[in-house]
Amino acid sequence: MSQIYASLPLLGFAAWSGTGKTTLLEAMLPKLVERGIRVAVIKHAHHNFDIDQEGKDSYRLRKAGAGQMLISSRYRRALVTETPEEEATLPQLIAQLDQTQLDLILVEGFKKLDFPKVELHREEIGKPWLHPDDSNIIAVASNTNASTELPQLDINNLDQLTDFVVGFATQDKNESFSCSDVNPSEMMSVDEGRTLILEQIVPSKIQIKVPLEQALGQIVSKDILSPVNVPQHTNSAMDGYAIRGDNLDRDSYTVVAHVLAGHSYDQPLELGQAVRIMTGAPVPANADTVIMRELAQQKGDIVTFNTVKAPIKPGQNVRQAGEDLAIGQIAVAAGTQMTAPELGMVASLGIDAIGINQPVKVAIFSTGDEVQHPGEAQKANCIYDSNRYTLLSMLTKVGCEVIDLGIIEDSEEALEATLQQASQQADLILSSGGVSVGDADYIKTVLDRLGQINFWRIDMRPGRPLAFGQIQQTPFFGLPGNPVAVMVTFLQFVEPAIRKIQGMENWQPQVFNAVATERLRSRPGRTEYSRGIYSLDANGRLTVKTTGKQGSGILRSMSEANCLIEIVPKQPNVEIGEVVRVIPLLGRI
Image (cartoon, rainbow, N blue to C red; front, side, top):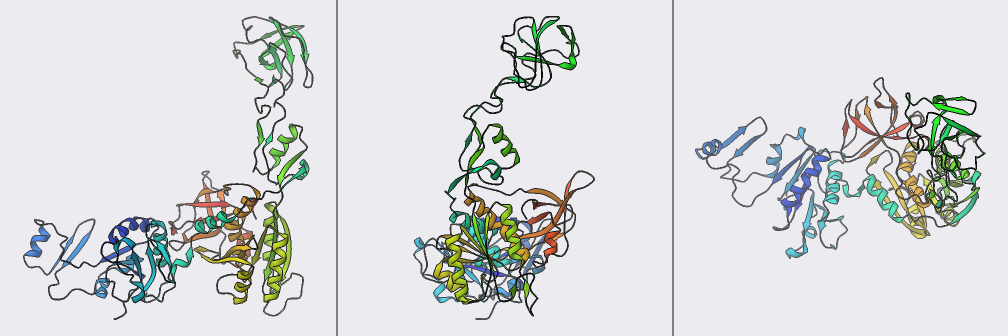
């Protein structure tokens, strides 16, 4: 068989009749279009077919003898070619496509030809598998397990199938595409990776009690209930005069007391009486209305009010006891991070110590013989370790205790000893560099021996390589070596995991929408994180631009940024004036 060539990705769906190839393609095409993939479909039919309707002009002209009938309108064009002698080949059909306007060619049928294919298989059809006899099949989509090392997809999971096709379509393009191409199923989306990680993270159950002054930034372990009413007494919301709401029709009132904050008038207020009262002072029994001082005129012990300027309403300017918090009401819910407002509120309740989840202990280390400590004389072919200092800062900001294990030499014994130590001392382990797909075999050997680790390629930039798993039941993250990639992967994967360990369920970072002031590009299907600067323009709009060069080793791009610009997979290109997602970095790095 001859090799099929195309100038862009070519992917077939091979299956026995009745498996549902057309139905699957029909459901998948709208999802591919939503992801920005421009698709052409070539379908092979084993029988005679006619796309023209009898009676239409094009049908009549073709039947009259036109070997090729080209019909065109404002919205589409179609070329119908008669092939009575010989069926057109797939290369001939591909050649008729305008490949400059496409990202992907999908083929239904032609299952015996030599080009990459996904086998569709349904157990109930009762037909044999195709992949044992077709080396061009790069994945299997079925409703049962196949005995194969090929990637296996769920034929009933349309999103999973679409992700596979998008990954295939967005690989680096060569002159031809065949089964030797990189397997796109190895790529995982940011959302998929984060979901898989969070499914394996267990919140901490260790609780400790700390003085209020040590609680800033910590996570409340159980609901803090108010032991008192807040405010404790029904009190005045301003300086003025307290009267009875059932006695508003009088021209004047007799002032019987002057009540300052911290004091009270302990007699019930009678009809025709008033008390001069300060903000926060408790109102006497029977009093339920306060008139501001600016509307009052007092001579001796008689006060009158300017009701023409501001009519009096019963109940005005009075704060009810328990209006803010009632006795037994939740003041701070479990899982809340203690910030200045929470600290002030808890202190106002008379509480001086609270229960928190024990701070998460995180062990960090860097790997590589080429990495050395700052302050040392720089050796040839070596770089100074910046990642540990970055991680130390970011972990401190999220309230973690950091165990710094330093730089680990490139040896199996050193790595195993370090991981053993970290798993015994820490609640989570972070490494940077040296544990991504394709690195030294001993790293995988050690990780497999001590726990269960998955090596992932995340469809994002920067930060594609990521390792995650358990080292003796302790969660482990292997982050990339590039400094910017370390920060981005920390924000997208590690921080959500830490928040869950801390007890903050369903934690989400703050996200804004902003108008792009420059053109931004990304590959379809990939999540792109550019370092950006957002600000308000003269019209009050939130706008954003990049910090310049975006290489994953350019630390300056992160230092100058106040946000990440997130270009989502379904938005491959952003033109000037279009809206993008902005993730603020203030307080996170």
